Length: 445
Ligand code: GLU
Image (tube, rainbow, N blue to C red; front, side, top):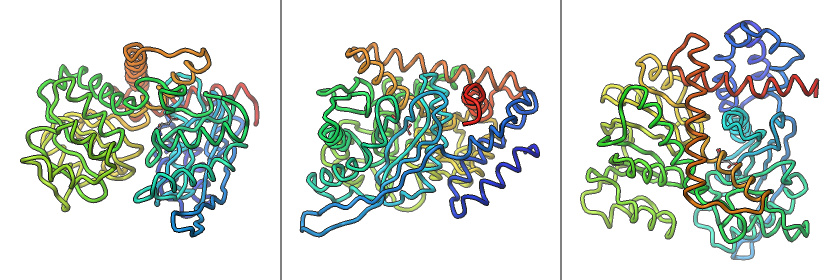
């Protein structure tokens, strides 16, 4: 790293102790920026980098709620409004027991560059809670969401900050959050949240968008080497919204997805995943991966190792951060994997990324490859503003165009900086320059 960039990173570590994922996300971006700053030294003016790594606003609040036994429970709520240079803060809410300030800051920081890459004029933010929706009744989830929104509502708005879903927050939670926002503000303001139900202002394709987009990105990468999904064996991790729709799109393109996982284990289904069954188990019954194996002949449940032990042509990490380590990366490369496209946020460890880059495998990092979700959120905002609802075909076409543009922009930037095929450098510098140009025009704020 060039000197200035290194100083900024050291200061981030000093000022944000015990936040390893946040440090990792910042390091990953900063280490690729040196050539951009060398070429355009004005990007180091006005403490631009120091401002970029400091969230504009961080909100932490108490979320008390009453469980079905009448016991009072207390969780912690977060919203980090990281950067609004390109538009209102935009990013999901994560409800998971691992959520803390570190996790929300790493996700918020990633979101700035991801959202810039979509070219949809949205800033970056993220929020959530350490509330664990597993095993909670619908009524408990509703009471929690209402309490969470009772504080959050004063900080958000369609021109201010627009939350959506992430791990643990899907259509059900967004519905309860929207209902409480509407009640508290006495405003039907559809553009304040995305990922809404179709009955009250949601967009077709939003549910599918992150998974579909990760596959579209992989497809564009494969095309650069005259390869495709047709006949490809695909390894997927996770079994949430991203994984399910990544499998769906991979299958539509002629690929055979053979794995998925959750925190209880992972499944190898050599015949190819039965998507209807997986949707029934995960989306309808909110069950575990073992419930799939019980009903599908030939499918194996594993608790040792990981989905990355299965030989595949394309890997789609779609579970969570740091789920794919150096050993997993070496196994993928050894088994002849051609492309990795990240549906999750920061799923590969820095050591794993190094392995991918050394081996010259096609590697699409999350902030580019999984931008389809938030891009379609922006399309939802666009429809809400116009009081319009697009067809599935139209929304999917727009998504495909955005993903293609992100891919091509990353490649062009990589080429410009003498690193052809380096999507990491391409994505980080493209996203950074868009945000930096706007920040410099706004003055020191
Ligand atoms: N949580 C998703 C992400 O990581 C989507 C955010 C949004 O739609 O605002 O990008």
